[in-house]
Length: 342
Image (cartoon, rainbow, N blue to C red; front, side, top):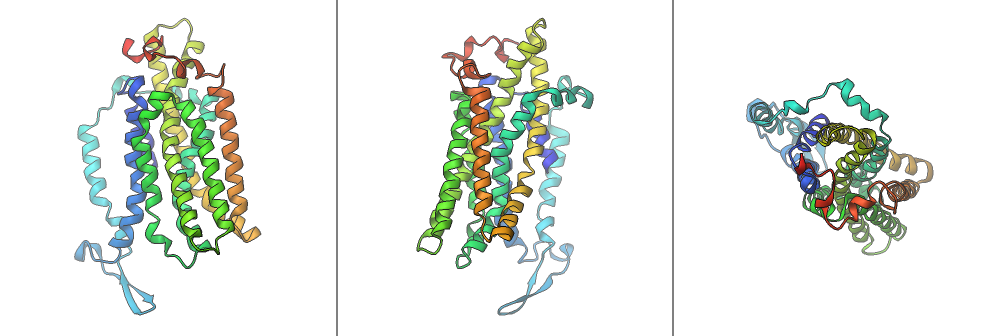
Protein backbone atom coordinates (compact mmCIF):
# COMPACT_ATOMS: atom_id res chain seq x y z
CA UNK A 1 0.00 0.00 0.00
CA UNK A 2 2.78 2.41 0.87
CA UNK A 3 4.61 1.54 -2.33
CA UNK A 4 1.47 2.10 -4.39
CA UNK A 5 0.88 5.46 -2.75
CA UNK A 6 4.43 6.64 -3.46
CA UNK A 7 4.44 5.38 -7.06
CA UNK A 8 1.03 6.85 -7.90
CA UNK A 9 2.08 10.26 -6.56
CA UNK A 10 5.31 10.15 -8.56
CA UNK A 11 3.40 9.11 -11.68
CA UNK A 12 0.66 11.73 -11.52
CA UNK A 13 3.09 14.61 -11.02
CA UNK A 14 4.14 14.37 -14.70
CA UNK A 15 0.69 15.00 -16.15
CA UNK A 16 -0.09 18.51 -14.94
CA UNK A 17 1.43 22.00 -15.37
CA UNK A 18 2.70 23.99 -12.42
CA UNK A 19 -0.54 25.91 -11.93
CA UNK A 20 -2.54 22.68 -11.51
CA UNK A 21 0.00 20.34 -9.96
CA UNK A 22 -0.89 21.04 -6.33
CA UNK A 23 -4.57 20.34 -6.89
CA UNK A 24 -3.89 17.17 -8.92
CA UNK A 25 -1.55 15.76 -6.27
CA UNK A 26 -4.00 16.74 -3.54
CA UNK A 27 -6.93 14.96 -5.20
CA UNK A 28 -4.94 11.79 -5.82
CA UNK A 29 -3.47 11.65 -2.33
CA UNK A 30 -6.61 12.84 -0.56
CA UNK A 31 -8.76 10.11 -2.10
CA UNK A 32 -6.03 7.64 -1.19
CA UNK A 33 -5.91 8.90 2.40
CA UNK A 34 -9.66 8.40 2.50
CA UNK A 35 -8.86 4.69 2.75
CA UNK A 36 -7.80 5.19 6.37
CA UNK A 37 -11.29 6.37 7.27
CA UNK A 38 -12.94 3.69 5.13
CA UNK A 39 -10.94 0.95 6.86
CA UNK A 40 -11.82 2.24 10.33
CA UNK A 41 -15.49 2.36 9.37
CA UNK A 42 -15.81 -0.85 7.31
CA UNK A 43 -13.68 -3.38 9.20
CA UNK A 44 -15.77 -3.37 12.42
CA UNK A 45 -18.83 -4.09 10.25
CA UNK A 46 -17.55 -6.83 7.97
CA UNK A 47 -16.00 -8.93 10.75
CA UNK A 48 -19.47 -9.42 12.22
CA UNK A 49 -20.88 -11.28 9.21
CA UNK A 50 -19.98 -14.03 6.79
CA UNK A 51 -19.49 -11.77 3.77
CA UNK A 52 -17.93 -14.44 1.55
CA UNK A 53 -19.92 -17.43 2.75
CA UNK A 54 -18.08 -20.78 2.73
CA UNK A 55 -15.27 -19.24 0.68
CA UNK A 56 -14.29 -16.94 3.52
CA UNK A 57 -14.01 -19.70 6.10
CA UNK A 58 -15.76 -20.24 9.44
CA UNK A 59 -16.09 -17.62 12.20
CA UNK A 60 -14.16 -17.54 15.46
CA UNK A 61 -15.87 -17.80 18.83
CA UNK A 62 -15.30 -14.81 21.11
CA UNK A 63 -16.38 -14.10 24.66
CA UNK A 64 -18.88 -11.27 25.14
CA UNK A 65 -20.64 -9.82 28.16
CA UNK A 66 -23.88 -11.34 26.91
CA UNK A 67 -22.35 -14.73 26.21
CA UNK A 68 -20.53 -16.35 23.31
CA UNK A 69 -20.32 -14.46 20.03
CA UNK A 70 -18.87 -15.02 16.57
CA UNK A 71 -16.50 -12.91 14.49
CA UNK A 72 -15.14 -13.42 10.98
CA UNK A 73 -11.81 -11.70 11.71
CA UNK A 74 -10.37 -12.82 8.37
CA UNK A 75 -12.77 -10.47 6.60
CA UNK A 76 -10.65 -7.53 7.78
CA UNK A 77 -8.21 -8.58 5.06
CA UNK A 78 -10.39 -10.47 2.60
CA UNK A 79 -12.80 -7.57 2.07
CA UNK A 80 -10.15 -5.61 0.14
CA UNK A 81 -9.02 -8.43 -2.16
CA UNK A 82 -11.65 -7.88 -4.90
CA UNK A 83 -10.87 -4.15 -5.01
CA UNK A 84 -7.12 -4.79 -5.12
CA UNK A 85 -7.60 -7.27 -7.97
CA UNK A 86 -9.69 -4.81 -10.00
CA UNK A 87 -7.15 -2.05 -9.36
CA UNK A 88 -4.27 -4.29 -10.44
CA UNK A 89 -5.96 -5.04 -13.78
CA UNK A 90 -6.80 -1.36 -14.25
CA UNK A 91 -3.19 -0.37 -13.58
CA UNK A 92 -1.81 -3.03 -15.93
CA UNK A 93 -4.10 -2.22 -18.85
CA UNK A 94 -4.92 1.44 -18.28
CA UNK A 95 -2.05 3.34 -16.68
CA UNK A 96 0.46 5.32 -18.71
CA UNK A 97 4.00 4.24 -17.84
CA UNK A 98 5.45 7.52 -19.23
CA UNK A 99 8.48 5.79 -20.74
CA UNK A 100 10.24 9.11 -21.30
CA UNK A 101 10.19 9.79 -17.57
CA UNK A 102 11.68 6.50 -16.45
CA UNK A 103 14.83 6.71 -14.38
CA UNK A 104 17.08 4.05 -12.89
CA UNK A 105 17.71 3.88 -9.17
CA UNK A 106 21.16 5.36 -9.76
CA UNK A 107 19.60 8.32 -11.57
CA UNK A 108 17.01 8.81 -8.82
CA UNK A 109 19.55 8.47 -6.02
CA UNK A 110 20.81 11.96 -6.81
CA UNK A 111 18.02 13.20 -4.54
CA UNK A 112 20.00 11.99 -1.51
CA UNK A 113 22.48 14.75 -2.30
CA UNK A 114 19.76 17.41 -2.39
CA UNK A 115 19.35 19.22 0.92
CA UNK A 116 15.76 20.11 0.06
CA UNK A 117 14.89 16.42 -0.10
CA UNK A 118 15.75 16.09 3.59
CA UNK A 119 14.10 19.38 4.53
CA UNK A 120 10.87 18.31 2.84
CA UNK A 121 11.07 14.93 4.61
CA UNK A 122 11.04 16.88 7.87
CA UNK A 123 8.10 19.07 6.84
CA UNK A 124 6.05 16.28 5.29
CA UNK A 125 6.56 14.18 8.40
CA UNK A 126 4.98 17.12 10.23
CA UNK A 127 1.90 17.00 7.99
CA UNK A 128 1.34 13.50 6.62
CA UNK A 129 3.21 11.86 9.50
CA UNK A 130 0.85 13.62 11.89
CA UNK A 131 -2.20 12.67 9.84
CA UNK A 132 -1.39 8.97 9.72
CA UNK A 133 -0.08 8.94 13.30
CA UNK A 134 -3.14 10.65 14.74
CA UNK A 135 -5.33 8.27 12.71
CA UNK A 136 -3.59 5.33 14.35
CA UNK A 137 -3.40 6.79 17.85
CA UNK A 138 -6.63 8.75 18.30
CA UNK A 139 -8.94 5.78 19.08
CA UNK A 140 -6.67 4.36 21.79
CA UNK A 141 -5.89 7.77 23.30
CA UNK A 142 -9.62 8.56 23.47
CA UNK A 143 -10.37 5.22 25.12
CA UNK A 144 -7.63 5.74 27.73
CA UNK A 145 -8.46 9.36 28.57
CA UNK A 146 -12.25 9.23 28.23
CA UNK A 147 -13.21 5.64 29.08
CA UNK A 148 -16.84 6.62 29.65
CA UNK A 149 -17.21 7.59 25.96
CA UNK A 150 -17.41 5.06 23.13
CA UNK A 151 -14.97 7.02 20.98
CA UNK A 152 -14.47 4.13 18.53
CA UNK A 153 -17.72 5.04 16.80
CA UNK A 154 -16.26 8.47 15.98
CA UNK A 155 -12.71 7.35 15.13
CA UNK A 156 -13.26 7.29 11.36
CA UNK A 157 -14.34 10.94 11.28
CA UNK A 158 -10.83 12.30 11.88
CA UNK A 159 -9.20 10.58 8.89
CA UNK A 160 -12.30 11.43 6.84
CA UNK A 161 -11.90 15.14 7.58
CA UNK A 162 -8.16 14.99 6.86
CA UNK A 163 -8.62 13.16 3.56
CA UNK A 164 -11.37 15.49 2.36
CA UNK A 165 -9.45 18.62 3.33
CA UNK A 166 -6.44 17.35 1.39
CA UNK A 167 -8.59 16.61 -1.66
CA UNK A 168 -10.52 19.87 -1.60
CA UNK A 169 -7.82 22.43 -0.68
CA UNK A 170 -5.06 21.70 -3.18
CA UNK A 171 -6.18 24.75 -5.17
CA UNK A 172 -5.34 26.96 -2.18
CA UNK A 173 -1.65 26.11 -2.53
CA UNK A 174 -1.80 26.63 -6.29
CA UNK A 175 -3.36 30.04 -5.69
CA UNK A 176 -1.32 31.34 -2.74
CA UNK A 177 1.81 29.19 -2.83
CA UNK A 178 2.61 25.96 -1.04
CA UNK A 179 5.24 27.52 1.22
CA UNK A 180 2.96 30.21 2.59
CA UNK A 181 0.12 27.74 3.15
CA UNK A 182 2.48 25.29 4.87
CA UNK A 183 3.70 28.04 7.22
CA UNK A 184 0.15 28.80 8.38
CA UNK A 185 -0.69 25.10 8.57
CA UNK A 186 2.00 24.50 11.16
CA UNK A 187 0.82 27.47 13.20
CA UNK A 188 -2.65 25.92 13.09
CA UNK A 189 -1.26 22.57 14.22
CA UNK A 190 0.39 24.24 17.22
CA UNK A 191 -3.00 25.73 18.13
CA UNK A 192 -4.70 22.36 17.65
CA UNK A 193 -2.29 20.55 19.98
CA UNK A 194 -2.77 23.37 22.47
CA UNK A 195 -6.52 22.69 22.35
CA UNK A 196 -6.00 18.97 22.95
CA UNK A 197 -3.77 19.71 25.96
CA UNK A 198 -6.30 22.16 27.37
CA UNK A 199 -9.23 19.75 27.24
CA UNK A 200 -7.14 16.88 28.60
CA UNK A 201 -6.39 19.16 31.53
CA UNK A 202 -10.13 19.51 32.27
CA UNK A 203 -11.14 16.02 31.16
CA UNK A 204 -13.25 15.46 34.28
CA UNK A 205 -15.53 18.36 33.40
CA UNK A 206 -18.72 17.95 31.31
CA UNK A 207 -18.17 18.44 27.60
CA UNK A 208 -14.39 18.01 27.80
CA UNK A 209 -14.46 15.08 25.39
CA UNK A 210 -16.19 17.13 22.72
CA UNK A 211 -13.59 19.88 23.04
CA UNK A 212 -10.87 17.23 22.85
CA UNK A 213 -12.58 15.65 19.83
CA UNK A 214 -13.09 19.03 18.14
CA UNK A 215 -9.42 19.91 18.62
CA UNK A 216 -8.42 16.64 16.97
CA UNK A 217 -10.81 17.23 14.07
CA UNK A 218 -9.18 20.63 13.58
CA UNK A 219 -5.76 18.93 13.63
CA UNK A 220 -6.91 16.44 11.02
CA UNK A 221 -8.24 19.28 8.87
CA UNK A 222 -5.02 21.30 8.91
CA UNK A 223 -2.84 18.22 8.36
CA UNK A 224 -4.89 17.57 5.21
CA UNK A 225 -4.29 21.11 3.98
CA UNK A 226 -0.59 20.73 4.82
CA UNK A 227 -0.32 17.39 3.06
CA UNK A 228 -1.43 19.13 -0.13
CA UNK A 229 0.71 22.25 0.34
CA UNK A 230 3.98 20.44 1.10
CA UNK A 231 3.65 18.28 -2.00
CA UNK A 232 2.89 21.40 -4.05
CA UNK A 233 6.17 22.88 -2.80
CA UNK A 234 8.40 20.07 -4.08
CA UNK A 235 8.06 20.65 -7.86
CA UNK A 236 8.39 24.41 -7.34
CA UNK A 237 11.54 23.94 -5.27
CA UNK A 238 13.20 21.63 -7.79
CA UNK A 239 12.38 23.89 -10.73
CA UNK A 240 14.11 26.72 -8.88
CA UNK A 241 17.04 24.49 -7.92
CA UNK A 242 17.64 23.38 -11.51
CA UNK A 243 18.28 27.02 -12.44
CA UNK A 244 21.16 26.98 -9.98
CA UNK A 245 22.40 23.43 -10.61
CA UNK A 246 22.10 23.44 -14.41
CA UNK A 247 22.64 27.10 -15.43
CA UNK A 248 23.94 26.25 -18.90
CA UNK A 249 21.31 23.63 -19.77
CA UNK A 250 18.36 24.22 -22.08
CA UNK A 251 15.03 25.08 -20.49
CA UNK A 252 13.53 21.75 -21.60
CA UNK A 253 16.43 19.80 -20.04
CA UNK A 254 16.08 21.66 -16.76
CA UNK A 255 12.35 21.03 -16.69
CA UNK A 256 12.78 17.34 -17.47
CA UNK A 257 15.38 16.91 -14.73
CA UNK A 258 13.31 18.86 -12.20
CA UNK A 259 10.27 16.68 -12.94
CA UNK A 260 12.25 13.46 -12.49
CA UNK A 261 13.81 14.60 -9.21
CA UNK A 262 10.48 15.98 -7.95
CA UNK A 263 8.81 12.63 -8.58
CA UNK A 264 11.58 10.78 -6.72
CA UNK A 265 11.45 13.20 -3.79
CA UNK A 266 7.66 12.93 -3.58
CA UNK A 267 7.95 9.15 -3.35
CA UNK A 268 10.79 9.22 -0.81
CA UNK A 269 9.24 11.83 1.49
CA UNK A 270 5.93 9.94 1.55
CA UNK A 271 7.79 6.79 2.63
CA UNK A 272 9.65 8.57 5.43
CA UNK A 273 6.55 10.42 6.68
CA UNK A 274 4.60 7.16 6.93
CA UNK A 275 6.66 6.35 10.02
CA UNK A 276 4.39 8.79 11.83
CA UNK A 277 1.98 5.86 12.14
CA UNK A 278 4.55 4.25 14.44
CA UNK A 279 6.08 7.20 16.25
CA UNK A 280 2.92 9.01 17.38
CA UNK A 281 1.21 6.00 19.05
CA UNK A 282 4.61 4.97 20.44
CA UNK A 283 5.12 8.47 21.87
CA UNK A 284 1.70 8.30 23.56
CA UNK A 285 2.51 4.92 25.07
CA UNK A 286 5.94 5.97 26.31
CA UNK A 287 4.61 9.21 27.77
CA UNK A 288 1.80 7.39 29.61
CA UNK A 289 4.18 4.69 30.87
CA UNK A 290 6.67 7.23 32.23
CA UNK A 291 4.40 10.03 33.45
CA UNK A 292 0.89 8.57 33.56
CA UNK A 293 -0.27 11.10 30.96
CA UNK A 294 0.09 11.69 27.20
CA UNK A 295 0.89 15.36 27.82
CA UNK A 296 4.65 14.96 27.40
CA UNK A 297 4.16 13.43 23.96
CA UNK A 298 1.82 16.25 22.93
CA UNK A 299 4.29 18.90 24.11
CA UNK A 300 6.92 17.10 22.04
CA UNK A 301 4.69 17.26 18.97
CA UNK A 302 4.14 20.96 19.56
CA UNK A 303 7.89 21.63 19.72
CA UNK A 304 8.31 19.68 16.50
CA UNK A 305 5.71 21.88 14.80
CA UNK A 306 7.52 24.98 16.09
CA UNK A 307 10.66 23.72 14.34
CA UNK A 308 8.62 23.20 11.16
CA UNK A 309 7.33 26.79 11.31
CA UNK A 310 10.89 28.06 11.65
CA UNK A 311 12.29 25.87 8.86
CA UNK A 312 9.48 26.78 6.46
CA UNK A 313 9.97 30.48 7.12
CA UNK A 314 13.78 30.46 7.15
CA UNK A 315 14.32 28.35 4.03
CA UNK A 316 11.28 29.07 1.84
CA UNK A 317 8.88 31.90 2.70
CA UNK A 318 10.87 34.78 4.20
CA UNK A 319 12.09 37.57 1.95
CA UNK A 320 15.10 36.03 0.29
CA UNK A 321 13.81 32.49 0.84
CA UNK A 322 13.82 30.03 -2.04
CA UNK A 323 10.10 30.35 -2.82
CA UNK A 324 9.55 33.99 -1.87
CA UNK A 325 9.82 35.48 -5.35
CA UNK A 326 7.72 32.68 -6.90
CA UNK A 327 4.89 32.88 -4.37
CA UNK A 328 4.78 36.68 -4.25
CA UNK A 329 4.94 37.18 -8.01
CA UNK A 330 1.72 38.80 -9.18
CA UNK A 331 1.50 36.78 -12.40
CA UNK A 332 2.51 33.11 -12.54
CA UNK A 333 2.84 33.46 -16.30
CA UNK A 334 5.96 35.57 -15.79
CA UNK A 335 7.89 32.57 -14.51
CA UNK A 336 10.86 31.62 -16.66
CA UNK A 337 10.18 27.99 -15.91
CA UNK A 338 6.51 27.58 -16.79
CA UNK A 339 5.95 23.95 -17.87
CA UNK A 340 3.65 25.21 -20.65
CA UNK A 341 6.70 26.76 -22.32
CA UNK A 342 8.21 23.32 -22.72
